[in-house]
Image (cartoon, rainbow, N blue to C red; front, side, top):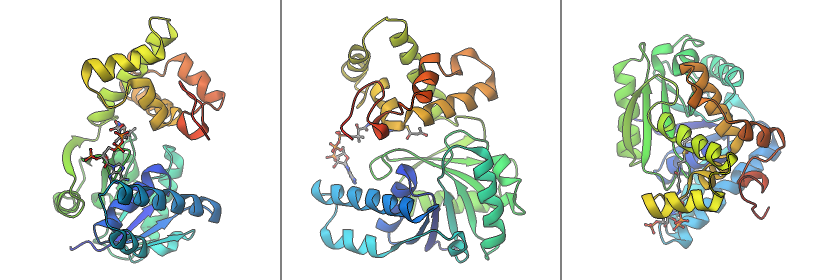
Length: 286
Ligand code: CAA
């Protein structure tokens, strides 16, 4: 199957980024958001990122306009009916994802269509088996910011059709120019299973008064050449997402070092979600 029509469910940071790379690669893209306000926010995200690509000299104005012309926002999930690939990128809330996959199963007409989830940690198998086409459901996990990060994790389950996996890999590498890392359907896949405990360990270190946030971050930036320190990166990802992923890792492996540290839990309860709310381990202009 030659994929030309892509659907993205969710126009947040990840969904808008995924839609952007698909549109830039020449795909016809439909993004579904929950209401008009969220759709407008998603469109602003997409426009800003494309603008940044132009400012950085990565894209011409003509290519930006062409990419924008290939994207349509909708609040109607039925608009996914003719899609050949649908990528779900909503919040890490399993009941919501299950509801979306079940609905897509009834809406998307082609039996060949691929359903993908951008989940950071939830089992793809559970999303797959809630549909009548579990062999066509796969994990396509992108990294933030999607237009800049070169990796995509490809997650297959014990029931994934090998042809579906090959198609999804071809799409990621040839169409989107991403590098693919393949992982089994285990919570955290490859990157988050390593990255999330590293970041929560930094939070424990900070909470224990072992070092300041700035020193922890500078330590890893200057001593290990990371582009962002662990606390800065947690703020960038979103502390709510961090907590959700840590919860899933702990639930899967039952190892204490995967559990979210109390400070992270309290910050999320207090609405300190990092960059998106202007307050996390650091303060940001809102
Ligand atoms: N489109 C295309 N290219 C863009 C762009 C855009 N919208 N915005 C920036 N770029 C390019 C720039 O041109 C630049 O490229 P060159 O090096 O070739 O010039 C590069 O991206 C870096 O951009 P900047 O110099 O403007 O920005 P920066 O140096 O401040 O870097 C950053 C910003 C890329 C976000 C960097 O800080 C970084 O890599 N941080 C770590 C990000 C990370 O680890 N993400 C993964 C999070 S985990 C995750 O997402 C998974 C999960 O499930 C939780």
